[in-house]
Length: 114
Image (cartoon, rainbow, N blue to C red):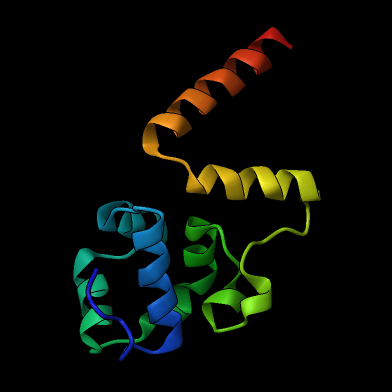
């Protein structure tokens, strides 16, 4: 990933999380409802219109808008999750793609067995 340290904190975090979560630009643009050109304009510093989409961006990245704006105490939107659920999510995010796929298959199997 390119050096994002010269970007505003919000854009730094958007780009870093996308990289960490291996999110694709095309999927991001489609979910948020912007063109790829708009995304490129954000990265080039020509536009900061990402601020008008901050809630949708936060939803896509599974973080809070506050975290994207620089509040480190509010990374994940956890208001409705238990500590165990948060631990599971954080562990899942650290897994390889293959492990995530196997875990997802297991969870679906367990749900179907319900």
